[in-house]
Image 1 (spheres, rainbow, N blue to C red):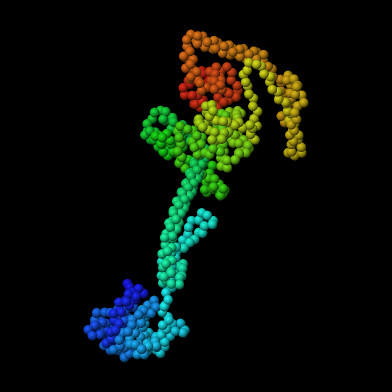
Image 2 (image 1 turned 180 degrees about the vertical axis):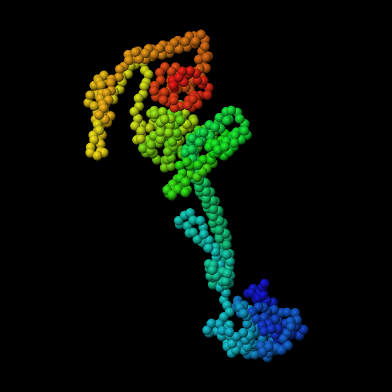
Length: 626
């Protein structure tokens, strides 16, 4: 609530009270120790002027209650001011001080009313010597407000100084030569108020100059502020785009890490994923409804089936299933041997979506990088080995050899004790995949053979059927000598035999560590067996000739359409696949390695190697397995 006059109020009220000039003082009363009433009268004009120290001055028509006994300050003013005419009423400078002059010349008296701070009322003579004061006090060390002291008239501000209150602005700097900061004009005042003391300001000699500067620069300042605002909006939009881009990058990195972990979980749980896919595909092949499949999975999980327990959800409408996969190589949290590195490499359990139309590797490839390497053995049932290559640089050959060795050791070739090859491809080279260990169509992968391995030393012997006779490759004989020393020390020496061209019919004597020699007799070649092989080769050639002659006769008899259908049916068949099928159908000879492979491969796995539309008819195949 406003209870006191400000400068503007004083200017207005002083202008209005000019009508009291020329009236005489009739009497003076006091309401309290700070408020006084001055009764002015001239003929029929009567006014009551109210003076309140520090707050107000105005005429009043209200009947204020007066003190019965007047105070000493009232009596002093009655003594000097009664019947005196009001000569002037003015404001001292621009301050909140009003000077009321009663009488003229040496008989003049002044009543000075202060309307700021705690306020005051001072009665002086014509020389401004204080005759009486309502609140005596001292300002500083020199100025004293007391009786018989001079009232300092110069303390009021006679000359008005102008100030322009400014605000510090910052423009988005894109050029090094452009100033980043500038000041905008906000307000103009004749003084610095308390609320503006901490703000920057510009001082002028007069208020007139300050007002002229403020309005003359107003239009140019508006244009500058508008341009700065546009720059700010543009920079804000750019910053928002940058923040959005950074947030998207962070989200993509998180998604990439999650996909990488999912791919690693699928690779580490390849056997479980393959079994789950095979189980659901088998049930779907039997034309079981989706609701019944869901019930079967729940029933199997309740009975403790290891595959069904990991199936969390069936999404058959999109041909997907959700598997709960854990890291089988992760150490337990209670293990004392676990360290910080293992904690960083540990993959948390996740629910991963598996596509039923793809193999475990194909599902894992969805989460793989193009720079990763996929290693597999050239045999059915081989495990998929993935080499993670986050840096994208070349993988050391030793790492590839170790991965190839691992793929061979975890295949059926290890159980069958046969030697096979391993291949590797880049992750981006795989465009279409089949179930693990099965054949791929031509052009699916660009494979690179792993030449050798540091863990497995392979001696390969390839038998090729050809019309021309080939000479046997002879390997040099090697003698192994074991030298015994004192204690348990031994020395093993290997020396190549000098008689490489020695006749193969000569007997060999070998000592196996004891005193009993073992005599190896030369191998007796059976001429009949060679003749049988030659006769079989001739029969095979005759068989091919008869087939060609029959096909020529059939074409001559008008069955060209049938040959056209056959060509259309087997147009995608390459030479290797054709030879493989011909060998299965004809089965003239079979090597010991093929027998071992047939023993290791199951019937259902063998059938999976053949296309669905090809019917297998080989009655003698099972006998060869025995």
